[in-house]
Length: 165
Image 1 (cartoon, one colour):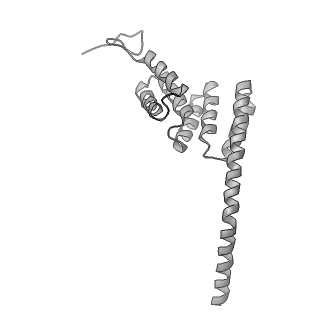
Image 2: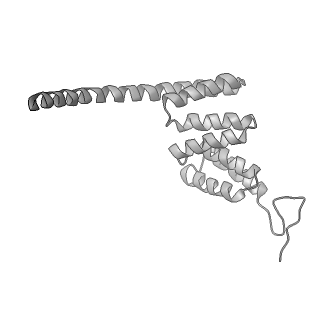
């Protein structure tokens, strides 16, 4: 009885060892497929095909749930269609995978600026400045925040004067 158990255990171990390299290849293939799908999704975004872009980006994420670029691109797609809740969701997912993903930081920060939360946007800008000081996203966000940052005696809302105690 013990011999049968040991033989089964050895067979199981051999199957597991043999499956490990195949799993790694599937993973690599999935990552490659995800990058290709994300690229096609980005092209569809540029051509204005929202439905196709969303489908391709979602397929990219299914192929590789850790594709932060595809997650951020889907966030940008939703943001461009004024769905801030879905955009935030995908930016958050992208930042969970890659905490300094430039498109996700930029997109989430622009939503923060639109909501008047410049503190959160400035936090994201600091991350961008540390991780990618020369990136387009860093420069655009810095410029947007500079326009939103009140000077002495000004408030963020230009229609409402700042009050001092």
